Image 1 (cartoon, protein in one colour):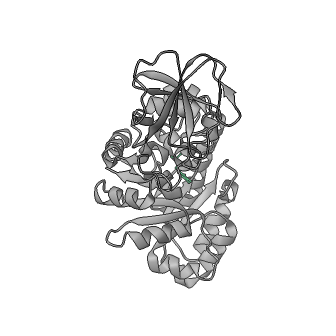
Image 2: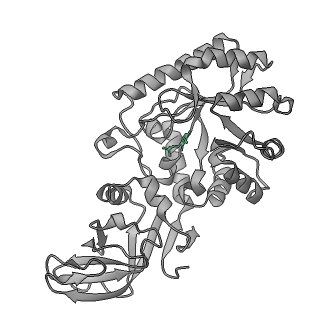
Image 3: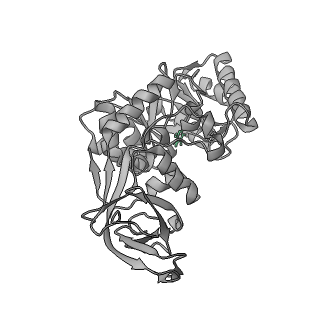
Length: 375
Ligand SMILES: *Cc1c(COP(=O)(O)O)cnc(C)c1O
């Protein structure tokens, strides 16, 4: 465990992001995605805070195991949990878990739907269906909507607890991208078919962060934000002007400078012996890929006391070298607190763009060696 490196998570900023979200979609209920340990921020703390302080009532995870852990760790609060992909529905032990702990599987294939409908124990349990409208990953085929609706009626069920679909390209324009327009149409069609068959749709949702940021999918009862509540936009660079999102990064990743030393032009630095381009100062910081500082961050620019640095040479397991060109005039010193990212979204997105990765992955990289500290 690191002592002077911390993944600081400010729940006040999460609250502020939620308030901003509600300005975009005041009439929608929120199903908050906390899969992959709350996008790396600690699902238990994030969920507890979101129920108790923000009044969010529904949460999504990817696996049954994640859902069980949330139920185990938060026994004193009431909230719904949906399991989205790794539902293990037909596993013998899974049924009791779903029923007894009120964990709701999102059914996205016909085999699971048949199994669910055939079992009288699930007769009064919420039926949640995910349709494939073009993502082509999981999901019931949209063009089998009528068949599915008939099956459900045959099993004597009259309502769907939550009908949903997922966009493949919400990080692009919702108004111009053909796939997005097509998926939107297909989902409306599925809804129409279900209603025509006389099935009630209690809840519906289509929008993840990218769509919500563009004000799309708000005609449904629910929205399903993940990334945006943790701070970043999920739109890709060229489309960011389409986003209404003004959220702040809820976390800061900080470390400190172990050592500094002056370097002359051409001096080789660290693994791979990368020569520095001009003379300047190297600062060794106490984070490496063993902490989640990806080797992809080589070449990325980071600012320290207004001084522009560059991650130089390969990121090591336990450390990284940050190079400052020219005279730094005492602004980069041993023992200084060094911030990889702060609450400012711009600089966080710069890190993602420069390293050609995505905000989701940057958060998920952080390992257990960096203590999470909640404010
Ligand atoms: C992860 C996920 C979301 C949230 O996506 P973001 O891009 O993080 O907002 C919404 N819906 C489903 C089905 C998901 O798997």
